[in-house]
Length: 110
Image (cartoon, rainbow, N blue to C red):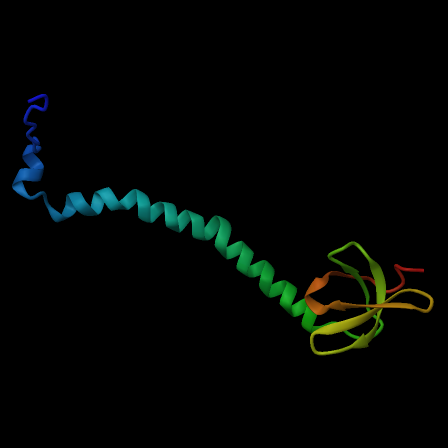
């Protein structure tokens, strides 16, 4: 009564079935976007993670480190997942190995 019939119109190219080249060309911007995303965001992040893992694996007793919380200290104990960091004379805390963000040059902390 109030609704009229609607008919879908098809484009001449869609009615003919289109070609494989047209479908590939329509996907090209999406593929290019993923390639740029990989080289701009994913690859540098993977490189940074690899460098951090190598730094954490190379930690040794006596190294001066900065933790993710901003604490500076000297590594006094080593464990598999945790390290002991002496932040003052007689004050030692335990932190996860992955919480170490930077190894300082020897003699930085006095």
